[in-house]
Length: 461
Image (cartoon, rainbow, N blue to C red; front, side, top):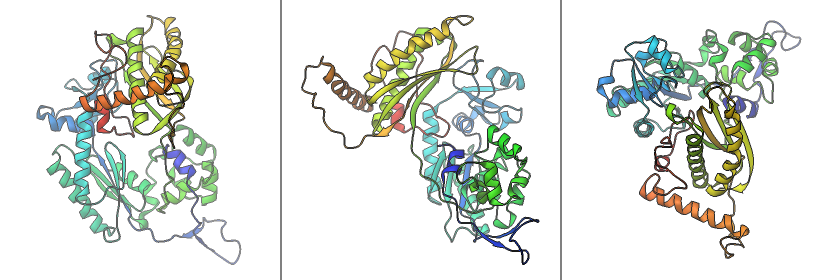
């Protein structure tokens, strides 16, 4: 679930007390004075600086002090998935094309991504933070949020705690791993504070500074406000954070729209609101193909591997899927292509592969008429409409002949689970479906998706 949907979904808090400015109506002009409940410092948010690139500099001392980017493949046509602090000084950031990064910085060092190492360092960082304070939320591979207790929320005590954590990470995990910390009354504000001073920053937002200290920020810097929401607010006359915060909660909520649209107004004023529980809705993988593997057959084989990885995760999490989506981006098309097909309620690799085979001719047809022929830059497979397996019952058809259509899925699901167990014990691709060798397919490894951290077991699939 996105930050925008969480803002809309959570229940609206009880309104604060309105202090009347006279004997008449409670508020007209000027805006009302609101008596808020106590808003102590409750959250410490830690954001590791230039995380992937910093890990590479930690592992390779020759990269330290130099501008570095991490790229998925060794090709000018791909983009940087991380840039070091030194590279960012040249205007290079995540998403910068490699060819452009080389133009911006002649001394640029480029290193391939090593996602398993990033997960290892992530676990080490969590262990170090845990020595000082429990980690309440793992927000991403390089961001965590920790709730402060009553004996930790004094500004001086919270700042001292942040310094201990930052020093502990540098000393016990790696000297190249600096972090920026934000401390505030709620998690949204703590996240904003962590972004205000980079690298190696520490910012505290106390209730007496709110919301005035946020006025210099752009609306787009708030999680949940994208281009569409920014346009919607502008149509209602809200062009910056000051204009949003100076409205009455109800008016700000109407401008935001949706159920409980005033939620953001309360958060920006330092009120802490309960989170809405989230649930995984999709499971999928994508892969940027190397330039020599962007033809039709390598794409098909890569898509099959991605489907097998997604199916394995589906079974491990105890889910079934009802929809398969195949998507990709051609070299000459930025908008992308996608198609979908309904699935029976399944977690069987063979059923999913059969559905993928039905979709692939549509992708082949889409790429056939393009200039230069079929050249797909990225391919992805996503399983959607997933739900937990509850009270699974043995099949009545399991004892039928293996070739009987009624018995086939029961047998293939058992085979899929047996393959999971073998690969977990003996390593990735100990057993698989279809060809893996012969130079026709990219190596499909586990990668860090933004907002999702792979389990270590995924590196053995």
